[in-house]
Image 1 (cartoon, rainbow, N blue to C red):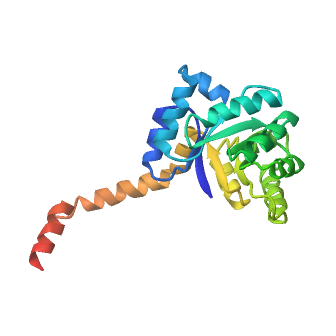
Image 2 (cartoon, rainbow, N blue to C red):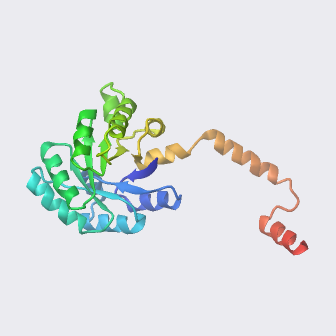
Image 3 (cartoon, one colour):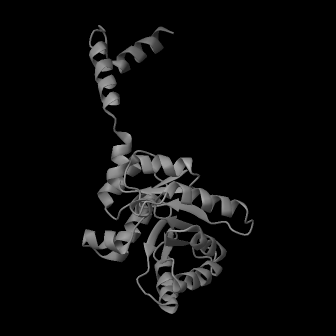
Length: 229
């Protein structure tokens, strides 16, 4: 499973990118607005940094407007993925944009039938919202499983399942176990996924034990060993 970060904050993206685990970025109008910067500049900077898929969402609500905005967004950078909502105009826009070779992320998916339609429309990604599904007492992991099963039985569909609305590390694990191709996480969730108190305790104990070693400088030890060979 590939990992994206769900943010438009360059500092957060730079930090997670430095970990060597990041394959792409998802944004939405809310995340862009939160940064208070020029939309186009932010998207271009993210693409240049990540050098991977970066979802940028249209705001038009009619198919013609979505297609027009999608074509324009695709000109910002080769890594832009046009994001459209899973509505009738969104499906129409997805079909047209995909036929032109433009990558499309169909977002706000909440049931398998929607994902099937998005796949048939040529979506590059479909984004089921795990957290929001859990909010209404449905099973987000089960939805991902159903979507992946449908796609596996549909040779003409090449859409990737992008698990979104991940609220905590367990959602990340659930997405991976359920067969998602990609999971996109907020910065906070990625930090939580990395953190564990036993890891910190174990690391501290190792360092304390190492203090008892007479010569502790690894570079000195290695150089001495190399010279003695």
